[in-house]
Amino acid sequence: MTLSIDAGGTNCRAEISDDEGVVSSLSAKTAEIGLSSWIETILNEQKQIKNICIAYAGQVKDGVIISAPNMKIDNHDIKNYFEKRFDVKLFIENDLDCAVLAESTYFDSGDICALYVGTGLGLGVVSSHNLITGYSGVATEIGHIPYKDAPFRCGCGKNNCLELFASGSGIIKFKKHNFIEDSLRLTDLRVSTNMDAKKIYDEFEKALLFALGSVITLFNPEILVLGGGIIAADEDILEIINSKVKDYAMPIALQKLKIVKTQMQNAPLKGALLLKESR
Image 1 (cartoon, rainbow, N blue to C red):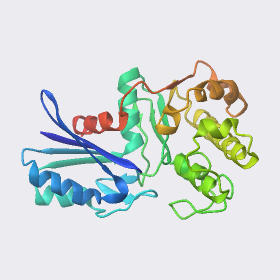
Image 2: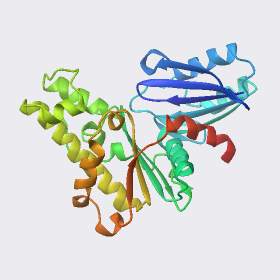
Image 3: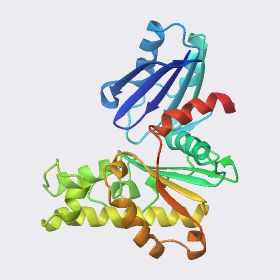
């Protein structure tokens, strides 16, 4: 059996499957668990598991968790730890890298980017059928490129990350900083008559368009897939993006480009399962 996990900044979702499909599903709040401890508990209860496939919301290289701006790390050398102590094979990759692998299969495209806006701002890139990860596993970290100063710090320690302006965690921080009601969603901020609330939305939109324009110009994808909880909850965001993105990207890179919302349910989890097939 296989344990597949989508370890996100807010929630950890897991499925246990066999050759016939999903046997059971599990979930936990990320802040309430240590990923390694959670896996160990599952393995002690489900001894038939032989493969562990993880989509991880952080930077990963060769089975080692390097960093995770929005998560607590309880075991960096996670692959080596579990393969030495249990009769399992463990595969782990950045969650957006897993997502773009799944999206690449779904759209049958070898030049595709997946930009997800949830707790953080993440990007996965497949270019000429190759997944781009970088020398240290931190390539395509669009959320942590310098953008402009914010009045608080990102989980990575900097105060000028793009993610501070275009992510769920960034919106929460700005609402708290401006004493804006926490329950207001992005769509509420967009139409608010409160100038501070409306400014949070305006800053989000500009930062998101900056991210999209940068991705389109740098990687020249055939398809750019948008996903994550913030995108899923906003019915108008795709129309807004398509009407304004031309002002942020190189014109030739926009030719024939398709910008779409993901059609997949939990692409990172499905992409994690693909890891064992490609290694």
